[in-house]
Length: 96
Image 1: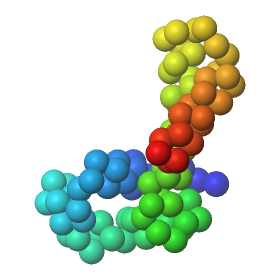
Image 2 (image 1 turned 180 degrees about the vertical axis):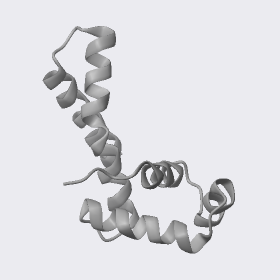
Image 3 (image 1 turned 90 degrees about the vertical axis):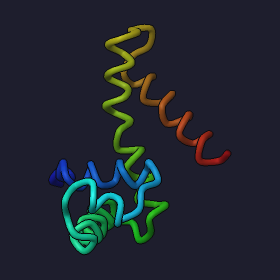
Image 4 (image 1 turned 45 degrees about the horizontal axis):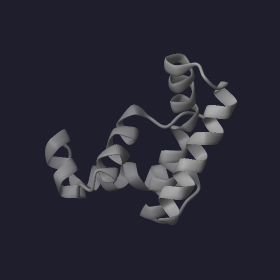
């Protein structure tokens, strides 16, 4: 499977920050239609059908990267253990 493009990742990150399509479009000098197209392609990429699921899947896609960074910075746990910790934190946040 190919990676999500940097542009799509950037747009989803802005959605996570609570920005609207209109705000993102203005910030990136794109049309709202282009933003919607990127978001709908991201739905397909992650295999989801609504924004909440998209944001959840996008956050979870960052877990391997976060685990590597935590392992490199703190070294107390293995990357696999850091990955488990990150997933538990995400689960707790989603349940809150």
